Amino acid sequence: MSQIPDNLPEKQVLEADGIRIVFGERQVLGSIYMQVQTGQIVGLLGRNGSGKSVLLQTIFGSRAVADASVRVNGRRVVPAFRERGLLNYLPQEPLLPPSLSLARAARLLGVDIEEATACFPELRPQFDKRIGELSGGSARLVQTLLLLHADTAFSLFDEPFSGVMPVHVETLAEEMQRLRHRKGLLITDHRYAEVLPICDVVYLLHQGRLLRLNGDVREQLRDYGYLAS
Amino acid sequence: MMILLTRFRAVLLFYRSIAPFMLGISGLILAAVLLPAIYEGRAKGIVPALLLAKLATAPVMWLLSERLRPDQYWFYFNLNISRRQLWSGVVALDGLLFLGSAWLMRAALS
Image (cartoon, rainbow over all chains, first blue to last red; front, side):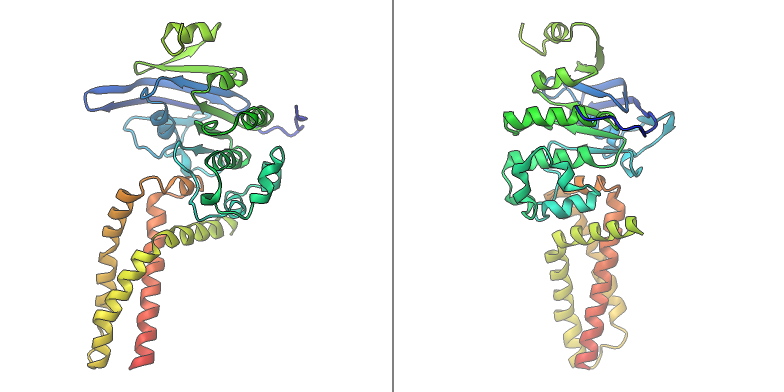
């Protein structure tokens, strides 16, 4: 584990509520309340189509939802992505333009690429490559690392482990734990075996409702049909 | 200053991704309308009208871009730049390039 610096940033609380989304006649999300604090890793689980990505995009502000309220320390921030230094978001889709080199993407995001990839030395020879030239797994890993190391109070990650090879998944999970002291992470990923051990709080999206799981999380995930019994 | 520079670079990057279409339309307007007008001696006062015609194609480009590449904005959102800011920058840059090209053509051929 890394040393925690003395000058810890002031604790911030990101809250989202009033999020109600209906597709056709189906209510995907109804009356959601969620909270993430800096220093926390929050896991968001749910079956396919349960609205995990929609929820993250609504919090990020790229999806406009009437009546949705996103607040930081009680102050309304909609759309949140316009607030400098507040939060970033890794979508399921490729994040970076394929023609952009890794080094240039890092510069634009204000990230020290050497530091961000310090635990992944095999990425170093690829700094000058374009994103489109990387393998799917490497591109995913790099995108996650850049956002993780970016100077924001919160990071929202939609399937950060998707396509990443197992040895890198372990290191990436350790890296997330190492950096939690300076930001809050909200992660959704079906690789629950990797996600659960690093989470302080676990939410489950179930039939349009957001449930905060306490106690034996795996047993509850089985009860709600997310895991096979 | 750093923020402005990053935004300018981001707009340039976004413009690069749609430049073939936008510059193609500019080239078409300049070659099909301005060039004959210069040779026929009726180019005076035509440039503002051509600029308006050029700007009128921007919503079509926006619509096509939204349909063909709906996921292209994520990186820019992560740089705190909205769709509106991105497209405003692109339209301004493209308009300036168009005006510059028209001025150069008139200066060289009149």
